[in-house]
Amino acid sequence: MALRGSELLPDKANEILETLSPAGRVDRLALTGEALDQPLHRWELAATVTDATTDPFRKVPGLVGIDASIIANEEGATAWIDTQDFALVLPNVYREPIRLTSVLGTLEGRWQQDALFLEHGLLLGSAPEHDAAVQFEMDIPFSKQSSVPLEMRLAASVLDAPVGIRDAYVPYRMPPPAYLWLQQALPAGQIEAGFSCGTAGSNPTATPVKPCSWRPISPG
Image (cartoon, rainbow, N blue to C red; front, side, top):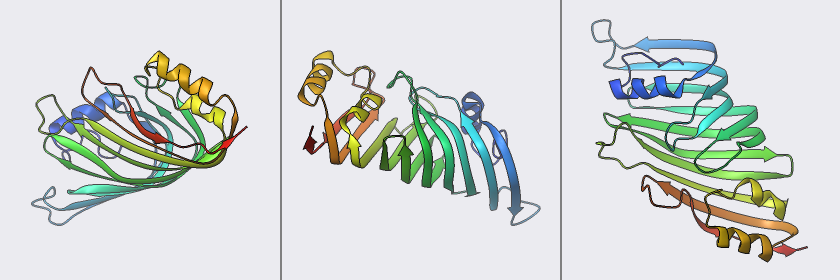
């Protein structure tokens, strides 16, 4: 996309952008610099993108169908997202993409020489059978030698949704006894209010997503 292959980001960040294979359409783009003799010292980029897509990378999710307005500078970036027909691709966690009919919210990012930080993600998503409010953050090291470990933090809440929506969000690598218990304990019903949060990190022996709570309230 707009920053891909530029000298505005660290070399390793550009390498990862190549791996992510970003695609989509840039509808508007403006780049300003403070001084002609030092164009990378202080700069600001503003862009509007449509149908932006990235491939999954290690444990970093792939994104499909992002429409957003973005402002970036040498310190970081902010995206205002307003999109339809969105998909989140996490092949190490879910067998199928998580598909949402719409997503509205903001996400901030900042970078240092060896890592990218996605922060303060506040998103409202709609799926065919439920709506959800999501908080999202992720620390992405550029190499194994980075001082920053890979970690994703995710929290979501839903109101008035069928219990069956859990099938789209339960990791396929969840221990079979735990998955069986979940199916038998709540075979049917309606969630009046539910909350779930979890973290996923770079420990290769750990469960991909560690849930911290899920509270469905109305038995069927």
